[in-house]
Length: 254
Ligand SMILES: [Zn+2]
Image 1 (tube, rainbow, N blue to C red):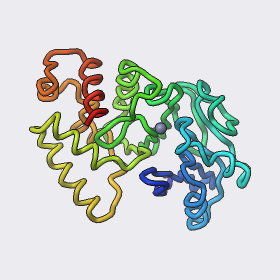
Image 2 (cartoon, helix red, strand yellow; image 1 turned 120 degrees about the horizontal axis):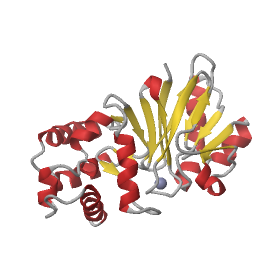
Image 3 (cartoon, helix red, strand yellow; image 1 turned 60 degrees about the vertical axis):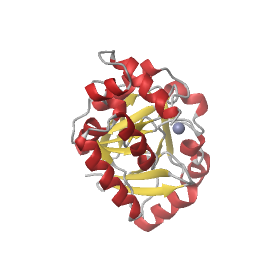
């Protein structure tokens, strides 16, 4: 089993260390902030062998060069965005396999937030690292993509098994919940989850990771088929992309 260590970074980012106990291989998912990543490595006694970037934004790849210089680790990222990933050694595309020690991850291209965003899916351990594409009760802003692209990218992630543990890169859940209840106010699973989120945050605890099953039941950005959501948006019977686009638009102005 992979060992995963979650690291709060910057204002509301999460970094993650992914460790294969069989070989000692250790990856950081993105490099939001060098000091806390190094502190976590020291605390666990792990040696950094890989940087796995989800996308080029500075709060995800800003620590690449410093960590690479220090650890002589391999930097892995999206082939499409190789020019914007500092220090990249291994450029991967949709369907490629990344080997981390004795473990393997499938690369899933998920454009929308950025054009070269990728997710890492470790099927044997049922974990996925999705960066800024899917959030707990939310999704990433469309900086470099269209609603069509993002809708398709989210569908690729949601095609993973319900049990999949999903690690997203920001603690945005409380704000996302405040929006979600405005577009699906009568969803009982959402109401229950909002209570749980408030309790976790009041206790200073993270709401990440989440799971595919939980997002499927509560996240309006992957619930375009919900009759209630469609009715609230005045889009009853509209297609999935139109419902997603309007949900995203309303969140942008929330
Ligand atoms: Zn980003």
